[in-house]
Image (cartoon, rainbow, N blue to C red; front, top):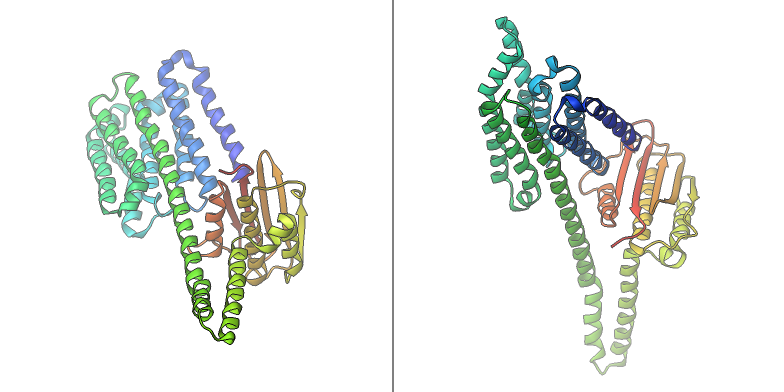
Length: 420
């Protein structure tokens, strides 16, 4: 993803150059609307693609933004082909529909979602093919056909996302409502403008752009709410784990010790004192599970070195942060990322060699663990890698897992040095 980020930004700038060079042919406010909408799609899509590589919404928003900017360029250089937003009608709206279907799960689920997405992509090509069969393919005819069909399409899209909202539980409604609402408003806006104002000047394009600009804004807001929900769930799970460990272990020992210490029998008093000492040891173990002893005593560098020494496979450590004092949440997260990744490499990946890199630059610390194993690792919900992602995100960072079968696995965590 990092390798693609700047090339995609360069492509975005290149697509903007066409309309900018031809500014005297277009209204400046119209050009501004087109540019802002396209750039919003690309930038929000890149961010979501980086943070949620397993969810295709980021990739779809990037593609939407590039198509939008290509259309803005084409209206100036090839007006006969791109007239009246024809390019947008072909691919841009179906991509928005596709994004709306995958936002909650990452991918299309079930036969109906696949059929709806396929119908969206086939909608405009079918109309064009029908016009060609009739032998009357012209911009005016296509505009007329679009004006006739878009009200039905807009109402269908608005109804689809309203139904999804009503069928979702309360938590999902709160999380995904901004994105679904943006899609529904854009669909109704597009239908209305296509029916009432098509072909009547530049200002409908600006309204199209404003409606479409709501979509990346809604997607960013929804994904932010998703992250907050994951953090809350992670905190709740950790709190329940600590409560369970205290209740089942320490609390029972202390209750037994209190009963023994109330007795006059010296033997029972001695046993009670022993139970208190054991409860203290249990508390140490509990705290050590939250902040490992090696990390507390020797810092991140020493703790990672200890992981490498205990590993069953050769582990090469490239430590470039030994001179830094890391915030405790960042150091703990980096430690567990290293420990989990190394453990997975020796248990599941059948790796012959593992490399660990600890680096810091630009106010961020990066932890990369790479092995030469069989690959194919996935961050499935409830798994160790999924838990690591939640831990890293709780520090304001991101976790990326790259694992191609036969080419090893790379786990990379990036976290800010300043945490709230």
